[in-house]
Length: 123
Image (cartoon, rainbow, N blue to C red; front, side, top):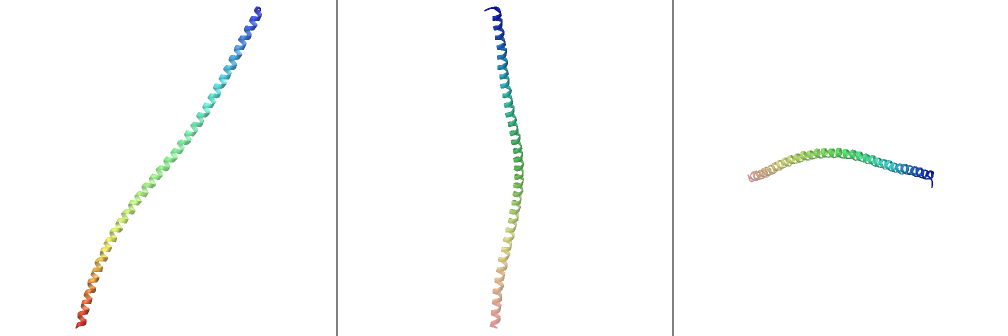
């Protein structure tokens, strides 16, 4: 082998290394770019899911607040109905007591009338 053969071999070797480095580096660079793209896409997908979840949470919280408000209103209405029911029960007890008193007075008056009629019939 002469010097020109060694030089050609060296040039081809260096050229091969350069091509190999560019190809592998290019492929690695492409792999890195693809990996970055995949990660970016995954990150974007997760960001969108997170935004959607946050919107759903806000909607659910608003609905929860509305239900609590309705529940409070219904509880207040139930208390009002209970107060009204207690008032009506009290009125009913008073009315029943009045009816009992009037019934007793009526019975006493009927006995008095019967007694009076018996005395008048004897005369």
